[in-house]
Length: 241
Image (tube, rainbow, N blue to C red):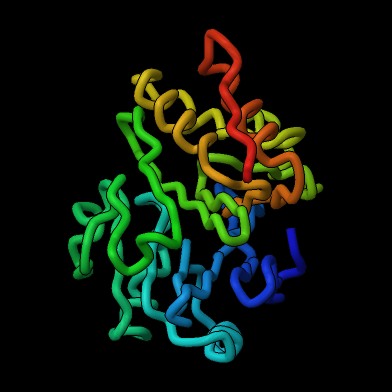
């Protein structure tokens, strides 16, 4: 994980990410926000973190915030502040969030169909099969980057005892994996398998996760291995062109 409060340029003039501290049950897990500059020079914000003057100043140097998305209904803690700070932006809700945050007005709901605002630039799909929570995964073909929320975590860089214990229990310390607490909610393995297989056809070589170490090489192999428990046979991996 990058040093806190540092804006990291992941792909030149295209993608940045910003890490901030975040705790789960007292364990430091971190929270990563991703920023994509689209072809119209408008900014796409993925998984918004806590707003600070420093963060706002850094983002303002990149462009105008136009679209704010959260990958799943759990990534909503700071949405109210963003909604108030950027009233001109379009806010998109993943499955379940409109009901959970009825206090906010969303411009649209996210699903398998890509909104016109970033159609032809980003790929997206719903990771289906859970009776508790579904997530939207995104891919930027230009930078060959997959962007996920909680679908994968990799906490290997944290040495806090609570983080270590929780991550080992959830299977996402020594290797990137879907945390066990969420994995067990996927009762429909057929739907999940179809979602993962679709993602593996996308042109990505790296992965930005919301929690833990980013994956900057062998991304498809890591992703396929993380979901090998789903497959009676080895997943088909489509290599990037």
